Every structure is written in C-alpha cells, then in structure tokens.
Amino acid sequence: KYNAGITGIGISLPNNVLTNKDLENMVETSDEWIVTRTGIKERRIADKDTAASDISSEAAKKAIEMANIDSKDVDLIIVATVTPDMMYPSTAAIVQNNIGAINAAAFDVSAGCTGFIYAVTIAKQFIETGFYRNIVVIGCDILSRVTDFTDRNTCVLFGDGCGAVVISRTEEDGIIGEFIMANGAGGNFLTLPAGGSRMPSSFETVEKRLHYTSMNGPEVFKFAVKAMPEAAIKLLEKYNLNLSDIDYLIPHQANIRIIESAAKRLGISMDKVGITLDRYGNMSSASIPVTLYDSFIRSEIKQGDNILLVGFGAGLTYGAVLIKW
Ligand code: ACO
Image (cartoon, rainbow, N blue to C red; front, side):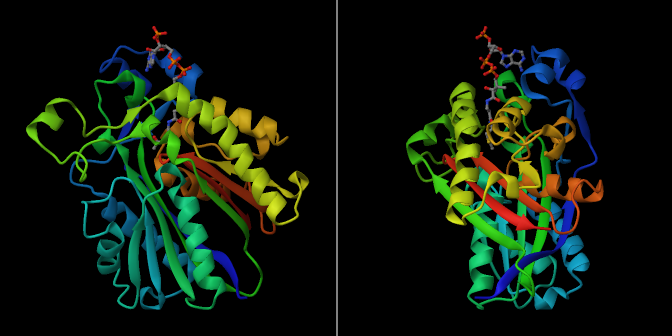
C-alpha cells in the first residue's frame, strides 16, 4: 500500500458579498434571526458570467502550484458538485481542458455537501493502490444559481465558493482514514426536483419554481446532529483511534448550532473547530476545503496535527476523513 497526502491547497471565492442586511430587503427576515438561528452574517455570490468550472480551475491552479507539480503530472481530476456547469460534460472534464491537465482522467461526484469527503475518499483509494500519483480533488458549488431568493427558508443559508487540493503519493501517511455512508430513505428532505430525467425542464417546472433547492430544514437538522458525530466515531473505531487523537475539527458549514452540537458530542472545544460560515455561509461541497484552507492560513492548524473533516448533505449522505497535516 502506498501513502496518500495533501500536498497543495487553493481556493476561489467570488468578490461580491451579500450581507444579512441585504437579505432584509429581499425577504421577510432579519440579521438577528439569521445570526441566532444559523451563525451566518454574510456570504459570497458569483457574478452571472461565472460557472463552477471557472472557480474550480482557479482553485485547482493554486493547489497545483503549491504542490509544486506541473498540470501535465495530474492523473485524475474529481469535482464534487451539485451545481455543475451543465448536465454534461462533467465540470471535471471542463477543468481538465482549462488547466491543461492533458494526461488526466476526469469525472464529477454528486454527494451533496458531503461531496468533498466522498471525492477525497475515492482519490485515497487510487493513490494507495499505486494506480495514480497525483489527483486534484475539487469541492465547488454555486448554490446561488439554484436558490430561490424569494424563499426565506433557504436563501439566507447558502453561498458560492470553491476549494481544491492535490492528493499525491507521499512518503508519510497523510490521509489516515475515511468513512462514507448514505441514508437514501431521507433523500426527499433535500432536493432539486426539476431538470433531470424524472422531471425534465418545462415551462411548468419553471413556473412552480422546481429548479430551486427544496429543503425540510428541521429534518435535515435532526439528521445532521446525529450524522456528523456518527461518521467521526465510525471512522475512529475502524482505525482503532480515540477522540483524543483528534487535534482539530473541520465540519461542514451549514449551521453553527449543528456544529456546536457535533463538537460537544465529540468532546472537542470550539477553539479547535474551523469556522467560516459566518463569512461564507453554506457553500455545500466547497465548505470543508475552504475552511481547511482558512484554518491553514490563520495558522490554527500546524504540521503534524490530526484533522478530522466531517460532513453531511443531500442524499442524504455523510462521512468523515482524518488527515495528518
Ligand atoms: N427569517 C425569519 N424567519 C424565518 C426564516 C428567516 N430566514 N426562515 C424561517 N423562518 C421562520 C419559519 O417560517 C418559522 O416560523 P413559524 O414558526 O411561524 O412557522 C420559524 O422561523 C422557525 O422555523 P424553523 O424551521 O423551526 O427554524 P429552525 O430553528 O429549524 O431553523 C434552519 C431553520 C436554520 C433552516 C434549520 O432548520 C437548519 O439549519 N436546518 C439544516 C439545514 C441544512 O443544514 N441545510 C443544508 C444541507 S446541505 C445543502 O443544502 C447543500
């Protein structure tokens, strides 16, 4: 078995900031409600000409530069997203062309907000078997494109962004363990109903606003507070590790109350938890890599730390990855 590790990381965030105050002018809500119920203060919104592959390519280039490899050395590109440029070709294939990774295979992964965890898990297997040496894993979502800005139940939650990592064959083991799982029975709690083979686009689906995210917030909340600790504990059990082996937690950034509950259940104090949702909202599959980058830049994590990445999302899916920084 070969070792896999993160050798580069990069992000791309739109410049345009949408604050809670701005939302007060769009729907019946208040800064106070949004902050106390979610912890979110502002989020980034991509301009109308920017698609997922644009910010994915930018983040990937930065990660490749940090990894000190050439884009021709990349063997595989995986993009975790629920907001691809289009149904097909995959966003990963568009990125492959954009960054000149002419020797790379490319595909997308659809696992909602757990997408980045799923994609890292896939990359780990390809490196460990010796099949590939360098893989670019991208978590990218432009949720504003599928958000109904007349629906206060959802529009206050989401933001746009992207984070990318290079996962390479390394001397030391940098991705210690992984656990991924799905609970398809809960799939209806979080959907984007129209535009697929079940309900193709039509005037009617547009009129009924079925091309937007539809969410049962309280049900997703209930799932999340159980799923994140469960993923963490299943991972630790699988690798014979303890909670005391975790130095830092990077959870999916959906709601501060969900994060606090998960941290409490895992006995991790909040000063050991990466938080970006106050500034960026819920960026779906981008939340975890962007928060990892943020914690790295702020020197909250240091070399040798065991960092647990843990998430949940549409599917319903959940999972965790333990990395050594
Ligand atoms: N502003 C003001 N009031 C609001 C708003 C708003 N933006 N949104 C809802 N309310 C109202 C509701 O209408 C409700 O009013 P009512 O009692 O008169 O019916 C009241 O506030 C309370 O609503 P609840 O849904 O009970 O509020 P809750 O405390 O559950 O918070 C929230 C709602 C924030 C959505 C929470 O359930 C949550 O975070 N759920 C998880 C969502 C999540 O994680 N989604 C991301 C999944 S991943 C992905 O989508 C890609």
